[in-house]
Every structure is written in structure tokens, then in C-alpha cells.
Length: 119
Image (cartoon, rainbow, N blue to C red; front, top):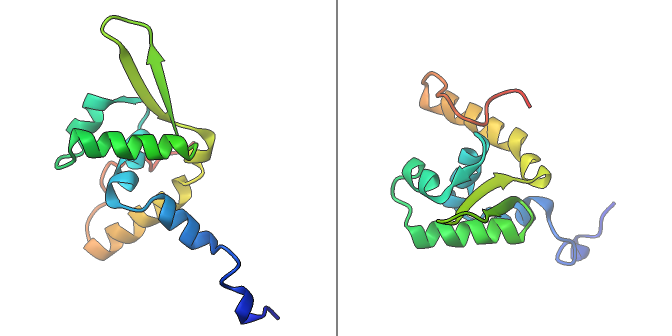
């Protein structure tokens, strides 16, 4: 039996992931990246309402956690693409479950979501 007084010393795995993906924009950026590599302008177009500043912040946070990879191509003008790392792909089953529950709760047909496919 676990001593309840030790719970404050143990990091809750659920809280860890929730803290990591702390807002809707992080989750939605990941959703888009499940469709493949994306450039900043593609993410901005796919996420109405997000500002360039907020998108940049979220991408930097996800990159710092090893969830997203940033690839800079030596071209003129410079090209930057973002993709999921293997660590980032580990969240796919959770995102798929959220999609399934959301579709059920909305009582609608499942949308064409980039993360609902075989990997």
C-alpha cells in the first residue's frame, strides 16, 4: 500500500503530460503535425485564431521537450519545417482517443483528422 504522504513527492504522470501540453494550441499544433511536416504559414492557415507569436512560442516549447523537430533548410529565402519526433508520435493514441470521444459527444460523423490513420 502506498503511503499518501508520499504523493506530493511523486510526479503524477498525467499531470506531467497535461503540463507539457498545457493549452489548446499545443494540442492543435500536434494534430496538424500528424498530417506530416508543416511550415509556419501552413500551421497558421490550419489554426484560425492563433497568432504568429503564440504559434512560435508553442513550437519552441514543443521543440524544447523533444516532441517537435525544427528543420532549417539553407535556401534563400530560408525554409523551416516542423515535424513530430518519435517521442511526439507517442501521443497519437491519446489524441485518437480524444478524437473518438469528441465525435461521440458531438454526435457527428468523424472528421478527416490527420492523426486518425495507421502508422
